[in-house]
Structures are given as structure tokens and as C-alpha cells.
Image (cartoon, rainbow, N blue to C red):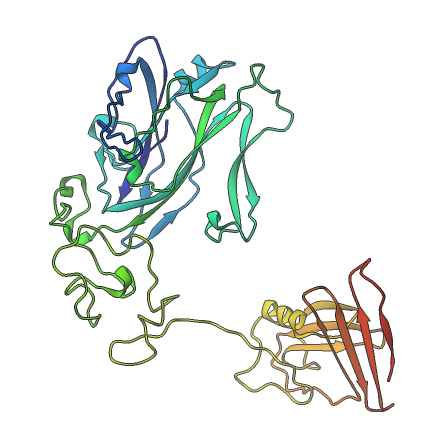
Length: 429
């Protein structure tokens, strides 16, 4: 199985998974496939699942409903497979020898699988399926959310991802079959016409299949002026009649379709186009856009939005009216980064007329510091003291601290490093 998806105003992912059977029951979900081998195309190959004596079952994802230009990249949870399949393969191993997927608009809207014969495929230039991940889970498997290595580019910057695990304490399959299987496609939209049948003698095995889990990523690129219902499939969708919706200047490497981007670059893509410039999620000038396409100022120009925060300590007096730190979270984060020379830092939020307004930090005689966020609009200022302290930590974990004491005319340096990395030194100068 894979997914069946209706993707536009209301869509779902539909998947079909063939497995060996005594007799054939249906033809391919997506029609015939063109099979290539090396540099040869349309090579002789039996791509008809039914003629190979296979059965299949279908599954549908929940409805996907989006607005124009939205990216839907959402874990859709675990859902049951047909109960007759669960019963048939309880304590048995299923051999999956291929799969098909489609994005479909279903009828009635919001009720996938009720009338599969009325499903209408979503054109690829309506809702582009960038990629998808799907798991078939056995009785001994479960899904788990795990942290992601920041250097793992396959997660596209996400902090976590879903994986299938063999449930703790569950018995292993007596025939060694896995308790789950993973199906994924990096080119989700195009995969509908890619053949996913396996060579003779090969299969994906799963013990006691019971459920499936899916995480699709698709981009809504349908121009709503052309309609967004099954009756509108033929409108603005053909190879020469496609009409894209509004696009950022950065789309198509700045080569805008004539008349599509007001104030955009001249020239660009002449005449009709058969795809949307939103396919690969280009940024606009409001967030993340390339300055090459969004110059600072000028007619029709806009500025790439970049937010920066800069904090510094004020030893005497008070912060200016527009310079106060506005939240405890920002205060404590800034203190941790400023290099306060302290044995420890304690964070606290107070409402006091006797402390400076906003964010302040103090250090006691033992070297411990307190970062304080004061919600009261106090007029108290920081008082000048005889001591100034600070520290910095290098990339390899070596920390250098300095304390200047005007009263004793002394400077104290403290050098420390990671455990097992050598000695330290300290003393007055």
C-alpha cells in the first residue's frame, strides 16, 4: 500500500500495495507505466500487477486542506489498514512486492475511501507533492519521535523526526521478518507514474501488519481564479493552458512570467508556462528573500527581513527608554551569552521598586551571580562599584575570567578548561 491523497482545497493521499495471491483482482491504480533500463526507454516489462497474480489493498490519509502557497509538511498520525488484512495476516508475514500512490480529491469531501470510484487525481501543478514518508506497522512496531542531528540535511532543519521501532518487550518474529517497513519518495508528485514493482524473488516483508503512518510534504500551487474542485481539473491545467498564481520575484530565478509579478524584472519567461514558480518554495522579500531579487530600496523594491539582537552591559545608570530588555527569556539568554565572570548564575523574575527596571545582573563576594528581570517600572539605576568582572569561553572549552578591583588596584585572572584537559592558573597581578 502507499498513500492516497486528496491535495488542494480538500485532498488525501491514497496508497495501494500489491501482495502475492492466488488470483488477480484489479488493474493498476495509475494505469500503465513506462519502464527504462540504462539508457533505453519503454523496454519490454510486465508492469501490470493484476496479470502477475497479485492482490492489493488501499489506504487513504486524512484530508489535507490548504490555502494557496501554503506548505503542508505535517505528520498525519497512525491509521488502521483494512480489518480483513489484519485478520488474514495475524501472526503471519506479508510479502509486499510493489506499491502505487496518488493524490486525489474525494467525494464526499472530507471522507476519503467512501466512494473510491469517484476519486479524481489532483494535477501535479495544483498541489505539488515534494516528498512523502510512509510506514507499514506490524503488531510489534510503534512510532517514536526522535531528535535529529543538526547536520542531517535530510530533515530540512527540523529538530525531530518520526521513526518506526520494534516495541520494547515485544517478541521477535519467529521467521525473522521485520515488524515494520518504510516507503518513501523524494520526488513525490512524479512518483505517481514511476513503477514501484519489485523484481521476481524480492519483497518487503512485515509481520502481522496492523496500521500505517504517513508524513507528506506538499505545496499548494493552484491558482484559485481557475477553480479548485474536481469539475475544474481541465481548467488552466494543460501543458499550454496552465495559469500560475501570484509568485515572489525570487521564483524562476527572477525570470518572471510576463505580467505575473507587478514591478518585477522585465523579460523573463516568454509566453505560457506549464508549472508554478512556487514548486521549490522560493522566499519572498518579507522573509528570507535573496537581496539579488529584493534590493534595499528603489522602485518596487523591498528589504530581506533579518532580525538581529545585540546586548551589552551598562555599568552605571539605566537603559534608555527604547533599550530595555522586554522579556525574562531574552534577559536570561543575554546574561548567559555576555560572559559574566561567575561561578554560577541564578535566574529570577521579580516585581520590585528597589531594583533597576528590566534586566540586571549582580555578583556576590563568593563569585555567584544573579540575573534578575524586574517587571516593575522602577527608576532605580545601577550604582558604580569598585569591581569589574568578565569572562570568555573558547570553542575548545577553555574559559578565561578577569576581575578588576579599583580599590586594591589589582587584576585577577582565572583560567580553566575541560576535565582531563590540563591544569589551570589564577592569582592577582
